[in-house]
Length: 314
View 1 (cartoon, rainbow, N blue to C red):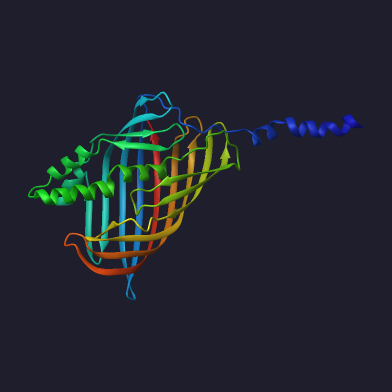
View 2: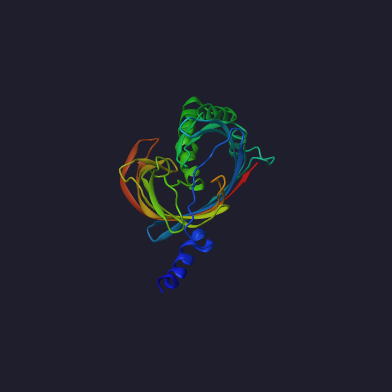
């Protein structure tokens, strides 16, 4: 009788279906020198400012191709990669004013000249074996070259332009961008339904913190699906450039949701989608250049962004 009752239990415990359901996935990067990865990004960002009772909309689209090549695998499992942009397409419109950049076009205006000088210029990125973007370096001389591509720029204007480039697309911004496409994996093996948390300091953007909540939705020896439901909180005491020569502070918070398809053998994502919605206020403090303070003007703001990534391994 006991034997008869044990048979179905033993079958359940040791059947292949049960073992597959409980199989663990070891997600971490096993870097190999010479490996090449191309990150193809497409992003759409809509910003809504409410001034008085009038809502102003700014629309920005971006498409980039970034090549990463593993230069060195470090003793701790991290890797130093060489990075270079292969192509950049930018489009921005506000109140009828439009800016368009395509680094493969014949465009010779100031914006196209600036970004064309960025193409194929190499800088370094260090990534831990669990996906943390540890450092970005070597961009300073690239910004100098970009500025030198423009004619008639005065010395003080060069300093201002370089400061803007560092803030808007420098090392901290690159770290943040890469943190959206490269997941931060758990420090342990996981199976379906397991969750873990970590945090990203957003020193670019509007300052602040991103609290990540990761969950493995599916995993086997070939593929994994991962979701991140993150919360963003700006640092309201940080003074930032709000555009148009205006400085101020951002009081924002919101949700960032990301979904990834992972190649389980390499742990590199092959596709990912990121959706974010931030709400709050911009606190305008006055003209930064003229140092004129006109008091604090609180302007409600809503920012919606959608990003898709495709990652190819060569």
